Image (cartoon, rainbow, N blue to C red):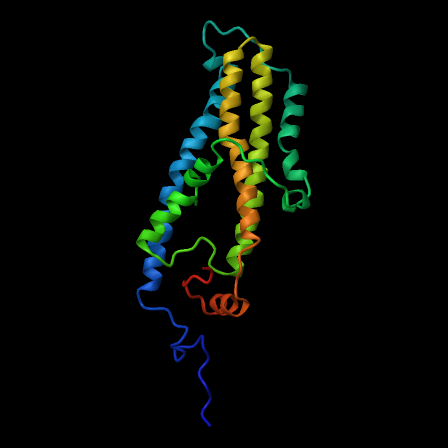
Amino acid sequence: MPPQASPCSNGGMANKPPAFAVPAFVDIEKRRRQWNAIPLAVGVGLGLAPIAVFWMRFFRPLRPFAFTAHAPTWPWILLGVIACFTPYAAPASLFRRQIRSPRWPGMDLFHRAAPDGVWINARLRAIDPAYRVIRNRAGLLEHLHMGERGERAHWMFLILSALTSVYALRIGEPLTAALLLAGNVIYNVYPILHQRSKRARARHVSIAPGRSDRTARCGTTQPTIP
């Protein structure tokens, strides 16, 4: 009896993707990166740019003539840096707990406009109806891991923004503190709630083990999650 061809070999036509599948997938990933860059740029402009402008005024070459406030002393700066990096020292279990996130006003809109959100995914699926963010079991694990990393980063920037707002109040700039607080909510609080919501949904994604394992071994680009 002749040996049967492996499903991952050239003879296994049942699991072999069409010739156009790989180029289409590469094009979809390029579009995904381009469209995800738009909300990311808006978030950086609202959250990080005001913080950078605030602290740049304390450097002598960039100090405005009418600005007379003094920078914090080095011990306070060191304590602030340590506080900002505490989320990276926190155990991973803190980010993997099932925590019910509050439904803040505007969260539905944020879910739609965020990177890999409803609007971007809808436009990608208009190009390729088979497109999925999570395509197999390895993709699911990577999605959860990236969500944890993203939440740690937003906690770091949340602490930085909060400390900056407090110092703005200390030097007598309440309007600046209010603007920094608003940017902090948009750039950090909403993304943290969004990340937790995404991870909670991702943990309930149903993946057929056989299909996901075979897809990973054969290296196809066909999605395996409905």
